[in-house]
Amino acid sequence: MLRFRRWFIFSLIAFVTLFLAIACSGKFQGTPTKIRIGSKDFTEQFILAEMYALILEDNGFIVERKLNLGGTPIAQESLVSGEIDLYPEYTGTALLSVLKLPSNSDRQKVYETVAIGYREQFNLIWLAPSPMNNTQALVLTQESAEKYGMTTITDLIANADRVVLIGPPEFQEREDGLPGLEEVYGKFTLKEYKSVDAGLRYQGLTAGEADVVVGFGTDGEISAYNLMSLKDDKNLFPPYQVAPVVRQELLDRHPEIEEILNSVTARLTDRIMQKLNYEVTGKQREPAEVANEFLQEEGLLKR
Image (cartoon, rainbow, N blue to C red; front, side, top):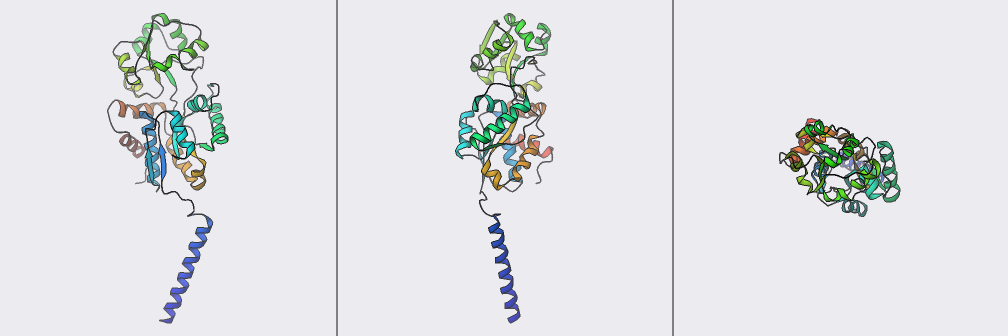
């Protein structure tokens, strides 16, 4: 009996010593009860944020979803203030809308510029950028391309007085909208610009109400309707590669998050993102369902 008590006491002391050693090393210090993931207010953001949430949950983290926050200013402020820990952002948006820097068409240069700017100004970290590029795009049907002989934006400008362009109201005022087109490609006059809600753009194009639509490189309708994007042959539009932007404090506590999230980002091409977006916008599936299916197919979930 005495031997058992001694064994028990020695075992208890060893356990307590080991626990204190681990605690003092910091392994248990500062571990968050949850990771708060945000998104802006459109389909692609919902899918991306769900991917981040699902893969982090699969790796043992507790995740709180704070999706559909609003536009860039709201999402950015939520990240800076600590209301969320990370969200998907685009390099072009960061360059023009957040850092207020001149446009640039060099992917690597833009990424390096925003990564340095965010770290110095906000203590936020850009993880690896995706191959996909959700940049502004001028999109048309194969039939319209053949009718007007258009493959580039230069071709569009040459045919402008015959072309009806459909898009959101803000494209008439944006730096990378009609004013930017005139500055880079020269003065032109469209036959008509039809200003519509973003959700009605492709309906107008496919119904024959317009010749060209203002879109984005990963719009699901591009692949679903076999459309084509005009080549930006004078490099007006900056790249809009997506990446998780993360609070430094979170990465300090859990550096493994970088590798986990980068494994998702590396697989996102234009064609893949177009397909995933259309699963939601065209087939009316839930973003979480589409995100989970993609991660399962890619073998990124362990359970």
